Image (cartoon, rainbow, N blue to C red):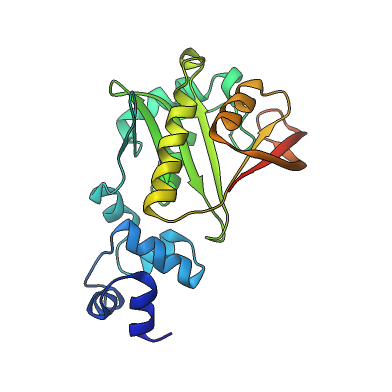
Length: 225
């Protein structure tokens, strides 16, 4: 694809594309996202390709979403102990299929590195205190999946729906996402309420291995269009 054609698709000048290709310019998230969509490549690869590594991207602080009661932003090293204490609670962990359990500080350190490479994987803060996480992740840049968790003491206050709605509005409004997937493990009545409130519709069921439970569980798959 020519530089001019790419510039037209992405909505920037040809000079910007040239600067990006020569690693002399770190694109905004919106520009990087559009490039990723054009080439069907993960967003973090765009930043590596353009010379803007995960550390620089985090330092840029591009995404910070403020809702009525919450702030969605990147997890920081000083939040590690809060993360372990809340996500490591069995009542939270048993609904998170990929989570290591028991959850340790080493797991939290690994998680910090992972979210550093996933621009849309954010943490939920209330009054500057970590209370959960929410993210949109994709393996192929085509289908994004919503995931979230909330510390048990913060359940029942509408925080999960508020955080997810804030991120979805950003992703659809600023980045042009028009289809988002989600799923929940059978029996998770709280997620049923959250996803229904957000407008997700069931499209089927599947099975997945749940690491905390060490067994195969049934999950309901949903989509928001």
